[in-house]
Image (cartoon, rainbow, N blue to C red; front, side, top):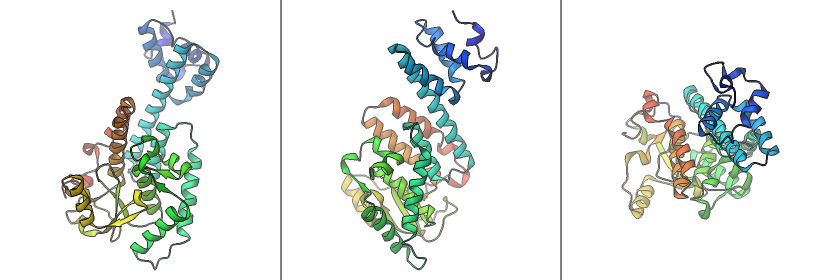
Amino acid sequence: MPSPDLLSSDSQSANFLSPKEIEALIFLLDDPDEAIHHSVSERLAEQGMPIIPLLEKAWEHNMDPLLQERVEQLTHRIQYNDVRKAIERWAADDGEDLLEAALLLDRYAYPERDQTAIREKVAELRRAVWLELSQYLTPLEKVHVVNQVLFRHLGFAGLDDLARDPRAAYLGTLLETRKGNPLSLGLLYLILAQQLELPVYGVRFPQHPLLAVTEGYLLNFARPALRDQVVFYLYPFRHGAVVTARDIEENLQKAGVKARPEFYMPVSNRSMFQEMLLILENLYRGKEQLDKATEIAGLRALLHENALPAAEHGNSEA
């Protein structure tokens, strides 16, 4: 029986556990007593990300299938909680750095992926487009430049057979393969456009990220006349195809979907990231990966409308 003090978070601070104490607890993860297993898991989970190397070491050096399974579960739980806290901080900061949000989401699915490499690849793409832009171009001409560099010169593409694949929704995967689905391409396009200081914003469109190009930058997303500032829309998944509000309405009618005001309204990056999480959640549900769908729903709940700044309330009402 393990020491009660070792299992109790009340008897001492979670930060006081030594590596030897942590290792002792790890090897109790396969205890057949469920009460002990639960206490051990809780105590270890309190330690957070610093114990991940010790968990990985235990997994590598112990061939007990039950212990390995529980180590994997605990590792994922710790990493997920770390992403949750990071997204909370992102939202509390201002929720506008969409690249940071994309990296956090990527970290959820691929915790071992090199995030510095992702940043560098995005910076390379931004520079490639920037070299072709001119301040004298119209917004439409600038979008055509982005499309030409991204899709024609660099070979990025949206593939229909990936449209419902949640694995293709992550930025790191898109940058590695240059093939993506509506979610990952919408995310990359919006990140690049905003880094290039183009007035491009996300739109809450069902299951298919839509972007709006506006007359100038937007500060107040609750303005009733916000839609009047939209010059045109574009679909990143279709090589950045430029469309009008009339085109959108016709496509909705063909799909049997009733048009709603928010389908045309630009929103903040925070609201758009929330919408993208909803799309990703539904992708996982479509693949019957309900555990992942539930976890994404938990991340999305951190950005619930009730928690949004007052200036964002009413986005769907305008």
